[in-house]
Image 1 (spheres, rainbow, N blue to C red):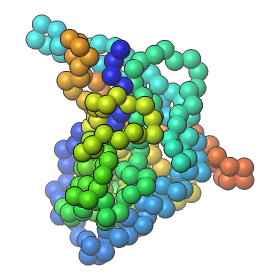
Image 2 (image 1 turned 90 degrees about the vertical axis):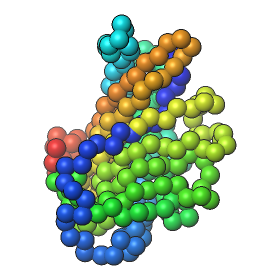
Image 3 (image 1 turned 120 degrees about the horizontal axis):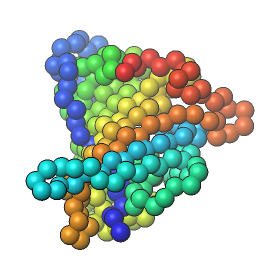
Length: 255
Protein backbone atom coordinates (compact mmCIF):
# COMPACT_ATOMS: atom_id res chain seq x y z
CA UNK A 1 0.00 0.00 0.00
CA UNK A 2 1.50 3.26 -1.04
CA UNK A 3 2.02 5.97 1.51
CA UNK A 4 -0.74 8.58 1.36
CA UNK A 5 0.67 11.79 -0.03
CA UNK A 6 -0.27 15.04 1.63
CA UNK A 7 0.98 18.16 -0.08
CA UNK A 8 3.64 19.39 -2.55
CA UNK A 9 6.25 22.43 -4.17
CA UNK A 10 8.88 22.98 -6.90
CA UNK A 11 9.94 26.57 -7.21
CA UNK A 12 9.76 27.52 -10.85
CA UNK A 13 12.58 29.55 -12.43
CA UNK A 14 11.71 33.24 -12.43
CA UNK A 15 11.38 34.95 -15.78
CA UNK A 16 11.73 38.54 -14.56
CA UNK A 17 14.60 39.55 -12.26
CA UNK A 18 13.43 40.44 -8.76
CA UNK A 19 13.42 44.16 -8.14
CA UNK A 20 12.98 44.98 -11.82
CA UNK A 21 9.69 46.78 -11.15
CA UNK A 22 8.87 49.70 -8.85
CA UNK A 23 7.18 49.17 -5.49
CA UNK A 24 4.51 51.66 -4.36
CA UNK A 25 4.46 50.94 -0.60
CA UNK A 26 6.97 49.99 2.03
CA UNK A 27 7.42 46.18 2.20
CA UNK A 28 6.51 46.13 5.91
CA UNK A 29 3.24 47.94 5.17
CA UNK A 30 2.57 45.60 2.25
CA UNK A 31 2.87 42.55 4.52
CA UNK A 32 0.02 43.81 6.72
CA UNK A 33 -2.16 44.39 3.65
CA UNK A 34 -1.30 40.95 2.24
CA UNK A 35 -2.19 39.20 5.52
CA UNK A 36 -5.52 41.02 5.80
CA UNK A 37 -6.41 40.28 2.17
CA UNK A 38 -5.47 36.59 2.51
CA UNK A 39 -7.82 36.18 5.47
CA UNK A 40 -10.59 37.82 3.44
CA UNK A 41 -9.97 35.52 0.47
CA UNK A 42 -9.94 32.44 2.70
CA UNK A 43 -13.27 33.36 4.29
CA UNK A 44 -14.78 34.10 0.89
CA UNK A 45 -13.75 30.73 -0.52
CA UNK A 46 -15.96 29.02 2.05
CA UNK A 47 -18.92 30.29 -0.02
CA UNK A 48 -18.00 27.99 -2.92
CA UNK A 49 -17.90 24.29 -3.74
CA UNK A 50 -15.53 24.03 -6.72
CA UNK A 51 -14.81 20.88 -8.69
CA UNK A 52 -11.24 19.73 -8.09
CA UNK A 53 -9.54 17.39 -10.57
CA UNK A 54 -6.04 15.95 -10.12
CA UNK A 55 -4.09 13.90 -12.64
CA UNK A 56 -1.15 12.00 -11.16
CA UNK A 57 1.71 10.52 -13.21
CA UNK A 58 4.17 8.23 -11.47
CA UNK A 59 7.64 7.36 -12.72
CA UNK A 60 10.33 4.99 -11.49
CA UNK A 61 13.87 4.00 -12.30
CA UNK A 62 14.39 1.01 -14.58
CA UNK A 63 17.86 -0.01 -15.70
CA UNK A 64 19.26 3.43 -15.01
CA UNK A 65 16.53 5.49 -16.63
CA UNK A 66 13.23 7.00 -15.55
CA UNK A 67 10.20 5.30 -17.07
CA UNK A 68 6.44 5.99 -16.74
CA UNK A 69 4.56 4.19 -14.01
CA UNK A 70 0.98 4.35 -12.81
CA UNK A 71 -1.51 7.07 -13.71
CA UNK A 72 -4.39 8.09 -11.48
CA UNK A 73 -7.21 10.61 -11.66
CA UNK A 74 -9.04 12.11 -8.70
CA UNK A 75 -12.21 14.12 -9.20
CA UNK A 76 -14.55 15.54 -6.61
CA UNK A 77 -16.36 18.54 -5.20
CA UNK A 78 -14.36 20.49 -2.63
CA UNK A 79 -15.98 21.23 0.72
CA UNK A 80 -14.30 24.25 2.29
CA UNK A 81 -15.56 24.53 5.85
CA UNK A 82 -14.00 24.27 9.30
CA UNK A 83 -12.21 21.28 7.80
CA UNK A 84 -11.42 20.50 4.20
CA UNK A 85 -13.10 17.58 2.48
CA UNK A 86 -13.60 16.30 -1.07
CA UNK A 87 -16.80 14.51 -2.08
CA UNK A 88 -15.90 12.10 -4.93
CA UNK A 89 -17.64 12.60 -8.27
CA UNK A 90 -18.08 9.28 -10.03
CA UNK A 91 -16.41 5.96 -9.38
CA UNK A 92 -12.67 6.19 -8.78
CA UNK A 93 -10.27 3.27 -8.28
CA UNK A 94 -7.98 3.31 -5.26
CA UNK A 95 -4.71 5.14 -5.79
CA UNK A 96 -3.19 5.67 -2.34
CA UNK A 97 -3.27 9.46 -2.84
CA UNK A 98 -5.32 11.92 -0.80
CA UNK A 99 -7.61 14.28 -2.74
CA UNK A 100 -7.78 16.46 0.37
CA UNK A 101 -3.99 16.70 0.39
CA UNK A 102 -4.03 18.26 -3.07
CA UNK A 103 -6.87 20.59 -2.02
CA UNK A 104 -4.72 21.84 0.88
CA UNK A 105 -2.20 23.11 -1.67
CA UNK A 106 -4.75 25.79 -2.61
CA UNK A 107 -4.22 27.43 0.81
CA UNK A 108 -1.15 28.81 2.56
CA UNK A 109 -2.49 28.61 6.10
CA UNK A 110 -6.23 28.93 6.66
CA UNK A 111 -5.97 29.67 10.38
CA UNK A 112 -2.65 31.25 11.31
CA UNK A 113 -1.28 33.27 8.40
CA UNK A 114 0.09 36.17 10.44
CA UNK A 115 3.28 37.69 11.82
CA UNK A 116 3.14 35.55 14.95
CA UNK A 117 3.46 32.32 12.98
CA UNK A 118 5.49 33.49 9.96
CA UNK A 119 8.39 35.72 9.00
CA UNK A 120 8.38 37.72 5.76
CA UNK A 121 11.43 38.75 3.74
CA UNK A 122 10.89 41.10 0.80
CA UNK A 123 12.65 39.84 -2.35
CA UNK A 124 11.53 42.39 -4.93
CA UNK A 125 8.91 42.87 -7.64
CA UNK A 126 8.06 40.42 -10.41
CA UNK A 127 5.23 39.47 -12.74
CA UNK A 128 3.17 36.32 -12.22
CA UNK A 129 1.43 35.42 -15.48
CA UNK A 130 1.51 39.05 -16.53
CA UNK A 131 0.29 40.46 -13.20
CA UNK A 132 2.74 42.86 -11.43
CA UNK A 133 3.48 41.46 -7.98
CA UNK A 134 5.53 41.89 -4.82
CA UNK A 135 7.49 38.78 -3.91
CA UNK A 136 8.21 37.65 -0.35
CA UNK A 137 10.03 34.72 1.15
CA UNK A 138 7.85 33.20 3.87
CA UNK A 139 9.15 30.98 6.68
CA UNK A 140 7.55 29.59 9.86
CA UNK A 141 8.54 31.59 12.94
CA UNK A 142 10.46 30.02 15.79
CA UNK A 143 7.31 30.08 17.90
CA UNK A 144 5.14 28.37 15.27
CA UNK A 145 4.08 24.80 15.95
CA UNK A 146 2.71 22.16 13.64
CA UNK A 147 3.02 21.94 9.86
CA UNK A 148 3.54 25.35 8.25
CA UNK A 149 4.08 26.74 4.77
CA UNK A 150 7.64 27.49 3.68
CA UNK A 151 8.33 29.12 0.31
CA UNK A 152 7.51 32.26 -1.68
CA UNK A 153 4.37 34.30 -2.27
CA UNK A 154 3.46 36.68 -5.13
CA UNK A 155 0.94 39.41 -4.23
CA UNK A 156 -0.60 41.68 -6.87
CA UNK A 157 -0.03 45.37 -6.27
CA UNK A 158 -3.61 46.67 -6.46
CA UNK A 159 -5.37 44.91 -3.55
CA UNK A 160 -2.34 42.90 -2.32
CA UNK A 161 -4.01 39.57 -3.02
CA UNK A 162 -1.74 36.55 -3.21
CA UNK A 163 -2.02 35.24 -6.77
CA UNK A 164 0.73 32.64 -6.60
CA UNK A 165 2.62 30.77 -3.89
CA UNK A 166 5.23 28.06 -4.26
CA UNK A 167 6.94 25.92 -1.66
CA UNK A 168 6.06 23.09 0.68
CA UNK A 169 4.59 22.46 4.09
CA UNK A 170 7.37 22.13 6.63
CA UNK A 171 6.82 19.05 8.82
CA UNK A 172 6.00 19.71 12.47
CA UNK A 173 8.72 19.51 15.09
CA UNK A 174 6.53 17.01 16.92
CA UNK A 175 3.86 14.84 15.36
CA UNK A 176 0.32 16.23 15.61
CA UNK A 177 -2.97 14.89 14.31
CA UNK A 178 -3.98 16.65 11.11
CA UNK A 179 -7.68 17.02 10.16
CA UNK A 180 -7.44 14.05 7.80
CA UNK A 181 -5.61 10.70 8.09
CA UNK A 182 -1.87 10.63 7.50
CA UNK A 183 0.81 8.14 8.46
CA UNK A 184 3.19 9.24 11.19
CA UNK A 185 6.00 9.66 8.62
CA UNK A 186 3.87 12.00 6.51
CA UNK A 187 5.49 13.10 3.26
CA UNK A 188 5.01 16.65 2.01
CA UNK A 189 5.49 17.32 -1.67
CA UNK A 190 6.56 20.48 -3.50
CA UNK A 191 3.88 22.58 -5.18
CA UNK A 192 3.36 25.73 -7.25
CA UNK A 193 -0.15 27.11 -6.75
CA UNK A 194 -1.84 29.76 -8.92
CA UNK A 195 -5.03 31.74 -8.51
CA UNK A 196 -7.05 33.53 -11.19
CA UNK A 197 -9.29 36.59 -10.97
CA UNK A 198 -13.05 36.09 -11.32
CA UNK A 199 -15.80 38.52 -12.22
CA UNK A 200 -16.72 38.65 -8.53
CA UNK A 201 -13.36 40.30 -7.75
CA UNK A 202 -11.91 37.32 -5.91
CA UNK A 203 -8.74 35.45 -6.82
CA UNK A 204 -9.86 31.82 -6.76
CA UNK A 205 -7.65 28.70 -6.92
CA UNK A 206 -6.98 27.90 -10.56
CA UNK A 207 -4.25 25.28 -11.00
CA UNK A 208 -1.47 23.61 -9.04
CA UNK A 209 1.61 21.65 -10.08
CA UNK A 210 2.91 19.19 -7.48
CA UNK A 211 6.05 17.07 -7.43
CA UNK A 212 7.74 14.59 -5.15
CA UNK A 213 10.77 12.38 -5.72
CA UNK A 214 12.28 9.33 -4.06
CA UNK A 215 9.12 8.05 -2.41
CA UNK A 216 9.43 4.65 -0.79
CA UNK A 217 7.13 1.82 0.19
CA UNK A 218 9.33 -1.07 1.24
CA UNK A 219 11.66 -1.91 -1.66
CA UNK A 220 9.54 0.05 -4.14
CA UNK A 221 10.64 3.60 -5.02
CA UNK A 222 8.90 6.09 -7.25
CA UNK A 223 8.39 9.76 -8.14
CA UNK A 224 5.24 11.59 -9.11
CA UNK A 225 4.04 14.77 -10.79
CA UNK A 226 0.45 15.95 -10.32
CA UNK A 227 -1.62 18.57 -12.10
CA UNK A 228 -4.62 19.90 -10.16
CA UNK A 229 -7.28 22.16 -11.67
CA UNK A 230 -10.33 23.89 -10.22
CA UNK A 231 -13.55 24.70 -12.08
CA UNK A 232 -17.32 25.02 -11.61
CA UNK A 233 -17.29 27.29 -8.56
CA UNK A 234 -20.78 26.37 -7.37
CA UNK A 235 -22.27 28.51 -4.60
CA UNK A 236 -22.39 26.74 -1.24
CA UNK A 237 -25.32 28.75 0.13
CA UNK A 238 -28.67 29.55 -1.44
CA UNK A 239 -28.76 33.10 -2.76
CA UNK A 240 -25.00 33.37 -3.14
CA UNK A 241 -23.93 34.01 -6.72
CA UNK A 242 -22.02 31.18 -8.36
CA UNK A 243 -19.03 31.88 -10.54
CA UNK A 244 -19.05 30.51 -14.10
CA UNK A 245 -16.58 27.88 -15.21
CA UNK A 246 -13.16 29.29 -16.02
CA UNK A 247 -13.82 29.03 -19.76
CA UNK A 248 -16.62 31.58 -19.37
CA UNK A 249 -15.22 33.71 -16.58
CA UNK A 250 -13.20 36.88 -16.83
CA UNK A 251 -9.73 35.67 -15.94
CA UNK A 252 -7.31 38.57 -15.56
CA UNK A 253 -4.23 36.38 -15.08
CA UNK A 254 -3.19 35.05 -18.47
CA UNK A 255 -1.52 31.74 -19.12
